[in-house]
Length: 161
Image 1 (tube, rainbow, N blue to C red):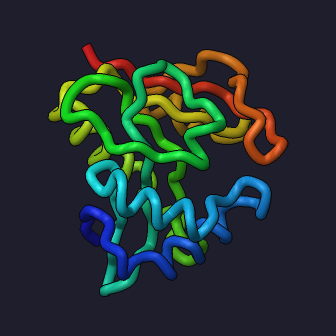
Image 2 (cartoon, rainbow, N blue to C red; image 1 turned 60 degrees about the vertical axis):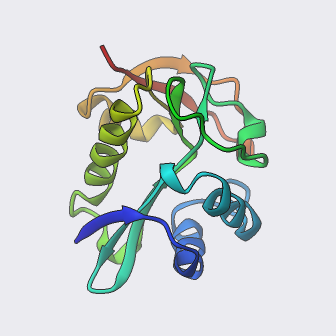
């Protein structure tokens, strides 16, 4: 398995993995993926194994510490340096789960964020995923303002020193 930058040809598999990992209310649309591929390919990574996409992580660089709901529908180009690398989506295909792929994607995403002098990485997650992110060095900063998909989300942040 290796991790690389997203390409437009990845779109069908990205949509399939998104639908496996999120409810219809939470899942990014095909149009949102197209916009992210075009606007923020530098912060959109995929894990590929045997020629097949098995996972991805993506999100824009933002100036604020926490994710806001407008980010799920509007994507702007990333600044070259600074800001927080946000994660709007991290998902692994059902058949490739429990193999450490999500953690590997996060590690590469974080390395790229450090290289571009980001302040840290910010994301939201459901309560059951808090221990996963805490194990990887993220801090739970409480319930998020986000109401995306009608779900209670928690702000998780990993600061870079």
